[in-house]
Image (cartoon, rainbow over all chains, first blue to last red; front, side, top):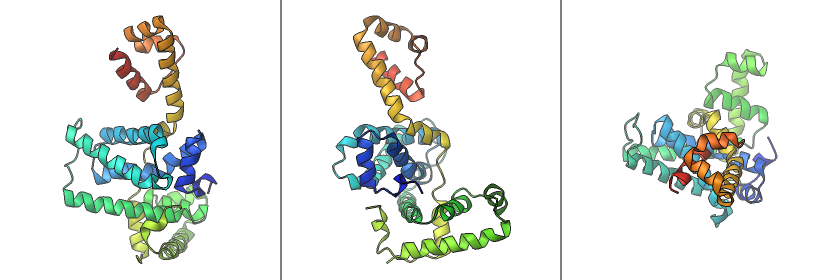
Length: 186
Length: 84
């Protein structure tokens, strides 16, 4: 885990404001999956509109970082910005809606799950690099045991047990927290 | 307190696949792109001939002067100079 990935959101914001490019890279890395998921899974934008919203979110974060009054509120700010830009895109009609507009109930439910997933992902950063890597490969990147075995050069017969051990550590980490919303690195 | 079982954790992790690499890299290049944009705009404000050349043919002028802006910077420049 890099030193920057251990920083709180507030610390990251402060470094970005100071012009630290590595901090900006980390900020994008930290929130990229979340913004992507809100665009594509939550609002079900087509790829082209999703990419436009994705870039616009980070452009606005970059240009308006000075206006953020509470540095620790980065996550809700990005969440609100992403949702607003997705809604604007849908209201404008987009280029071509590749998928049906989500029903309000489905949307609320999907966004709730995405928020919870982000919380789990944040908790995952407390695990070892090896655990983060194998869980990410298996679940988020949908890699097979064989691919994981080939790429990490570990016996495929040990992958299931490694995943189980890492999941167990993650569960303990999550259950040690009083509320999922407390997980932000504050 | 929220309780999690391994299956639920796995489901949640599946909800956040990585964003396309190109999108992430483009967002990470924003500080550089912003500096490039600011430089071009400042030069256009200081140099009328450069500005007129940009308005007449943005892409060729930038290429001639050695600028290689990415798509978003190009879009922003088009927006700014088409309004002038």
